[in-house]
Length: 578
Ligand code: ARG
Image 1: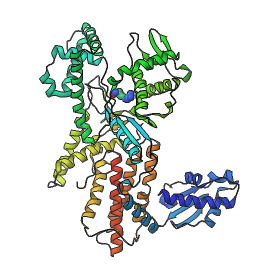
Image 2: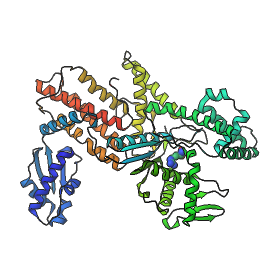
Image 3: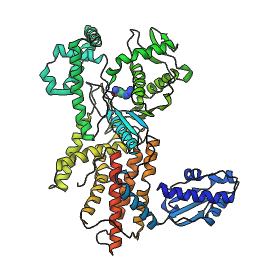
Image 4: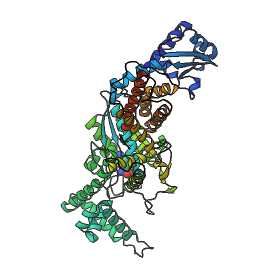
């Protein structure tokens, strides 16, 4: 717990001042040096004294011994100098008193760092391209983005979640041609986004030809598509209403997936919203002399920064992806006055973001350093790479459906009479995928193994959700429990669990600092592991006396709160029963 750590750091800082009054080391410096040892045998907290030896001009073992000689803190049971380390062991009962009281007091705010007060964070995530399939490649941006939003909200930031829909571009010209040629309203109303995708595939095949299907290429359709898109840009009523309809149909489909994940956005202003906001930025670039004409196109040369040019206008004067991002960022700065704006996309877009962030800087916008790109690696499923072109796309919707149905069949076997079975199967099925995905460092490429994700054993979503349900059922069996007055810690498993629970706030701080939800998933596994070891080795309801029993119930209650709070940070549903 940060409070306890701070007290220890202050204590050590005092001692160091006594050793050497000139050493300018404060509580914060020591706090930054304290480490959690990898093995409990090496203490619960340790100060590697080699970090002090230069400042103090003393050998690390001597420093450790000097500290050990004068150190005392009520949170510490034992402290010793070992090989240049100052190792600290917490007092279980002290920890219990502090942690249990704090979790009770803070409840669903336990673990929340107060770092965001008065600050605004804008998060741009999910952002699928309309009329294209919402596939497993979008899982990353959707769940990492939402998790980062939850983490920032938890820390007190005001957050604005934006779904920057890919709702503009030449593909709409193609869709309009295809719809006018082959589509009918009823088919699309019924078929939804799938029917739109089918039309899109059909027109692409028709334009470029497809030998396998025996379709000859018809380039005139490309001209027609361009013409329809131009009409759309010029505000043609019929095209505008078709376009709006395509967007609405797609959005309705995405909403189903968002609902399963418990995700809501604050804004759906997509790319189309920025069409009339780009000219001003292009003009500014021109006025500042930043635009260069290259083979007819307008670019910003970034050679001096080791990057290829940022494309602003095509030869025909039409705008591009970076142009829109620049206009959108300027608009959002005015609209939300953010302290930070986070973009979550695949690592494949890293250059794009680096380029236009640089352009924003060159344009003299002083908030350029508040823009953050959070990239993530690619996903393959059961070993197979995903490729939109060869049709190897797995829709998120189908992945969730498969996972839910597998969970249903497991539940039928294990717990057939459970109430609200389908709701629980959905929570566990979706949770399994989310947890599995977020268990990895986001930047790593991952190979999704369905079997592994769904296992009720091992480091999975179902396992941690099951642990949460276990805490609920222990508490449900003790309705007379109203809190523990005297806390007595009698087993090592209890102290270990307390230590895990006490670290929550620091973990949340780290996850925010490195934009990494996997820090939370790993922590959830630590807490679940510690709870289950405690549960198996310490009898709760059959404990020797009332104080021991109440202490164990208090630990169970605290675990329930901590797991519940942590689940909330990674889009994992709290399951009272499984
Ligand atoms: N629609 C884009 C895609 O699917 C992602 C948009 C990311 N956000 C942004 N502001 N560029 O690739």
